[in-house]
Amino acid sequence: MPAQDVLAELRALRAGDLPTHGGRTLAYVYDSALPGLDELAASAHALASSVNGLDPTAFPSLLRLENDVVRTAARLLGGGDGTVGTVTSGGTESCLLAVVAARDARPDVERPSMVLPETAHAAFHKAAHYFGVRVVAVPVDPVTFRADPVAMAAAIDSSTVLAVAGAPSYAHGVVDPVAEIAAAALDRGVRCHVDACIGGWVLPHAPDVPPFDFSVPGVTSISVDLHKYAYCPKGTSVLLHASADLRRSQFFASAAWPGYTMLNSTTQSTRSGGPLAAAWAVLRHIGDDGYRSLARRALESTRVLREGIAGIDGLRVLGEPSATLLAVTNARDDFDVFTVADEMKARNWYVQPQFAHRSSPANLHLTVTAANAGHESELLEDLRASVKAAVEAGPVRVAPEVLAYVGALEPDSLTPDEFAGLLAAAGMGGDGGVLPERMATVNTLLAAASPALRERLLVEFLGALYS
Image (tube, rainbow, N blue to C red):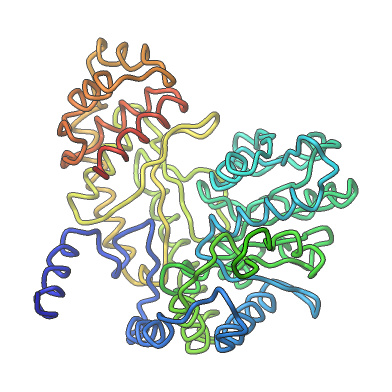
């Protein structure tokens, strides 16, 4: 096919995606609204996309770029002369590496564990699954959703290799009491990781946020994503360690074969230099003052939206968010937030449904960026109209026999026929590839499932999509 036809086909496919600019997709994407930034990042990416980050001695430009990026992140997050770091493919990889570094630094612990607040990102559960580290999930305050430092300290024992705190937690946007958690970990000789993937480039500019970075004694590592509020293209995060000694167990080396001695700083071997070069270019272009301005715009927009949501009858914000994330739930039982999500989508907004989990009710997640600044009234007007429409529609009704069917399913023995029956009950195509325009009924069915069953159902659904 001619190149122009290939690109035309790609543009046509992309036309069906959620918008990545303009602040209408309130999850997954981050928009600075700065003109020319995409073009700069794409040009920088193209200059280094064919370069392989596997061997920094062969491509010293990437070594320079990575050290520059890490230095910028370390300076922002209270690092000193001894702080080191690694650029990774995203927040999940940064969290995975923090866990494996903590595990491998303690070969004397036969069954290692890590202590997490129950609001910790699922990436840590993924790390536990991959690396055989047992999760000790500690309940959080049921009103503020902040980690309980006393309970966290009590959960640390001789098997603990890592304690984790969020700055902020993704689900509610609240900052955990990092100083108390880190002090408890330090007292027991345990590493403390601060997951600042989503907040690390914003919280340093936020007022009244308690210290959460390397200025806090006991904090040994921090993850911060550049493709979030550093507004870099997808595929870049930084894992910082307080010292090179702490990072050493993150690296992997193998000479147990006849080829080159494999030496990796991340879970990947071959790595395109494109994302790193794009991030480096964006960081240098925006600069410290630019990021301060972007962070303040996003924080102010979040404040305006939070106050506006408080004025919408039937809605309330969960917890006391400190950053740019809001979790919005219904304050009455005559409508469903899942229906509100559908109504917002009909008005060209995407808000992310979050299922109930222990003390946290079903809610809608809003990630606010600099692109939302100045457009809050439009979002609030559509949110108010969406609630009104949801009230008129009433709570989602699912036939009792369907709910009983879902409740009777066993995750470990789910059959293809049972999965197909559930797809049909949700009004979805038999191959799993046809999604209904409105997802409230699907989300209600998923909410009725146990977490283990929901995991299995979504794994099956993912398999049906990729077939």
